[in-house]
Image 1 (cartoon, chains in turn blue, brown):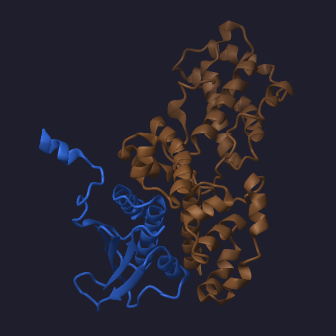
Image 2 (spheres, one colour):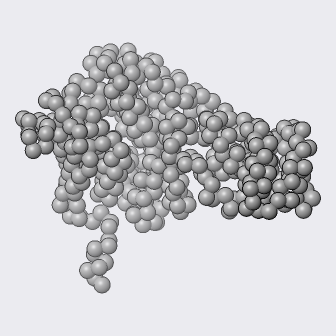
Length: 146
Length: 291
């Protein structure tokens, strides 16, 4: 009974989310609600403030939309969330159809910089296995600043 | 309320209109009473004949279906008239008309000729009830359990109080402690809050009390953003937004205000700010992709 109780207690007790949470979906706009829903749930349960939760949700939306917009056909999007004591780390991996990173002078990128404490993008060379350019956007949101 | 318990399964698909409607700030209960008093309907004398014809047919028969269709078609102007009463509240007339016609179908199916009452005096409140239900329920983009809705409403007040007390927005756990409910319930309600239909950014936000103060704050600070490269790039897009959306976007992304601070300044809830931002950013992405 004791162990069952532990399993079903979803409250954000320390350490519960220290292991990364990962989700993989088709790189399609209709998957966005799933991604932001997961992000929101996870961050709410991890004792971030409502402002932080709302910002993370917007940031996940922005990153994923950006990667979906440049995604190779039939490629996938993987989101990884690591909740730490002091910050949240989000990594989104996609596959770009053509070489080229998300435009870091765009308004969308400005939005991301505002919503996060740090945001970076990386792209690898053409990968025949995924028929595109593996592209990763990472952002960090520090706890307790808003 | 008319038909409250029996029309549950006839609600139109609400998700499809999430992008086109405005959240009604006043549920449709205040200004609709005049429908019955100003004789919106005349010349429906033939309806009772149609009902007699319907009553003479066997339910399930072709004749019954034909008579029923004739009745419903005959009364469509009545449904549309009632729908028009509710237009101007931010809901597209076509949607209201659709809902009103659903109400009409209910009225036709439920009217009992043998009771000797007038069909119109039965149909008008039935159709109005259907439209009112639509307003009451459709501010949520999807069905949410009542308890979650109620928690969501209580959360609004708790968030305001806690934000003042803490000087920042609260966590779900803090809200749960304040309301003495389970944190999971707060989590659910906050997430459900995002299903609350966002104010359309297509619709002009007029006639709201908060707009006066909003308009007062518009324009004065905009010149300082000219040095922000991104602002210049996005300005044509921002220019196409309604003032309220542009103002909120500007406050968050060019003045670095938190959502709670924006909410406090504009006198709306943080969750409302959050919804408007999400919607507006999605819209901007859509617009910039079109270029």
